[in-house]
Image 1: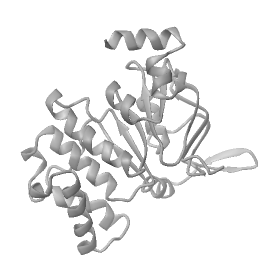
Image 2: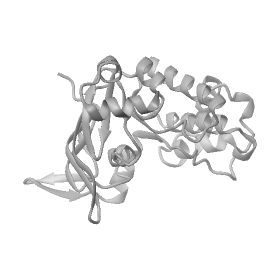
Image 3: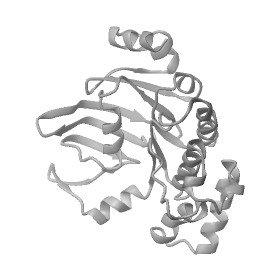
Length: 254
């Protein structure tokens, strides 16, 4: 058996006295698309942020591609890695947020080449060539010299996806990538995500887009109150949910 791309083993996360994650066990295989569903406050985004150590787990183990994230283990004791080591782990994990987080003072092209040039030390000419390929792919090559403020929300999010992919990550995380968009702009972002999935990119997606989850996901995890209540294929979880909490959540969306 190959090593899972994501393996969460009894992951806990607390903020002070508030326990947000209460023992998450999730596996996502290489090349799979997994969607995290659930009501607001269920811990979905917190778990996503733990996967690349933006939030530090307070219990359990989280592995990406077989590598323990954020910690080193010695004699059964966990020691947090340095920020430099954590940043190196993060460089292999792309993340796309609800808010596009583009640098407002840089052009579209400069936003995309920033990390490859400065983090991975890719030559500028090579980074620009790759960036233009990605912009062609997301349909925005003609906007390479534009600034973020000159783009629609959907265009900014497509640039944000291209920027993440420019680092050649082994895993892509999406935190409700369409929630800040006007409804008519959602489709263009989901199209880019479908293309990534078709290319075999491993993806973990927090989303409320049931159509996308049903069409693209290999696995669906339904979370509520910090636990995974139900998991399975989209057909199992979305069409034939077993748990009352899952049924109630899905019925509230209809």
